[in-house]
Amino acid sequence: MLKKYKVIIGLEVHIELSTKSKMFCSCPSDHFAKKANTLVCPICLGFPGALPFANREAILSTIKFGLAFGCRINNLSKFDRKHYFYPDLPKGYQISQYDKPLCIFGTWKNIKTNKSIRIKRVHLEEDTAKLQHQKVDGKNTTLIDFNRSGVPLMELVTEPDFGNGKDVAVFLKEAQLTARYLDISNADMEKGSMRLEANISLAPMGHLAGGRMDSHEVDLPKYKVELKNINSFAFLLKAIDAEIARQEKILSKGDRVIQETRGYNEITGKTFSQRIKEEAQDYRYFPEPDIPPMRFTDKEIDDIKKSMKEIPSLTRKKLSETYGLREDYIEVLIGEPKRIAYFKKAVEFSKKYGISPKTLADVMVNRKMDNIYEEPIDMIKKISEITKKDYTKEGDMVSAINDVLKENKKAVEDYKKGKGQVIGFLIGQVQKKLKGEGDIKLIINTLKSLLNK
View 1: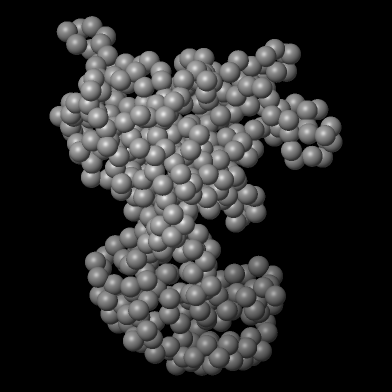
View 2: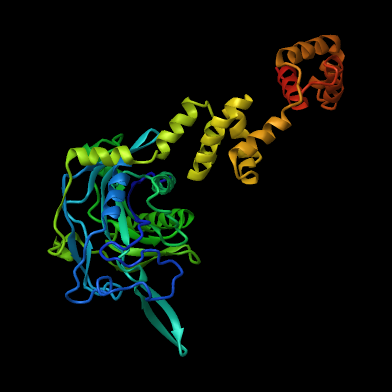
């Protein structure tokens, strides 16, 4: 835990959208594991004179994602050219959004810590091509695969509201889950369809806003270091911790931290410099002349909101308030949209068989019966079959246990002295009174509860 410095972290989350075609052309967007340079055309190859046209589905998906994070949707939005030279960008610029993004000023709340994270913007752009470093004829060579070039890429940018890697991971998992629930992307980090970048800086405690040592606000440092292209949550946490340690060491010596982009080497456990980080003015943004501005009425935005699928935060609330499920069960079930859909369908069937939602959640979480039975009704029938045996009512069981405890005081005293094996004798006495029709697990739990009072 740092004492001399306050950690300040902001995020940039890139998510490839699962549209059928690319952002500004009709080439297929599903590029993963496809033969290199087979999903290309003059537009996504950046040929001179090729005219782009916007993908409506990608625009709607971005708006839905922004709404899910409480963003305001701009009634007027536009695309811009972001200029920089890199081998994977044949045009010499990327079509992105600058001052009029689709979504702005959102908020996301961590229900466990009650901390709010401000969303600065969610905008839409085209992905770049992909460099492949390999040996050709024994020589180190860099080849370019343009299949990814032009794929719709949504970017969420937060304000620097994170103070540690743990909170970062919680937020990123929620972003991934939200994209999946909205059915706009699989956000698969292993396939590169979700990529993470963190901007990190440290503020000396003496620089707290207003000079108050108890203040949570800080005067932001004049630098930030960007950790680029992280492809897993665990990888990101390690990279953040390594970069915090590096910056603390530099600042403790009285030196200045350079604003730059850095990568992370998992073998050395350290970050490494990639390039000096650019400022916005370095990109020479200007409006994309080939794509007209986008206008949205309030009614159109409201219609998009009504068409959205249920988001994770609302699903959690329903599972808790409507079905009374435990928090840990909810988090297990909610991890997969298909599993929640299965559970909800099973709930409808279960009413006829008198099976509670809590029982359904239990067999799905602990026994994974939804993996065994493809159809919810088949799982319901199996649960019903298993529970057909009529156990004695809980009230009768408690009464029998109390009688046994009164009748066997010496056994009770022996148990409390540490002779745990006595509980077997007591269970036998309870089952004798219940004529063997008691639920053994319930008897054991109730006995231990009463004996340990």
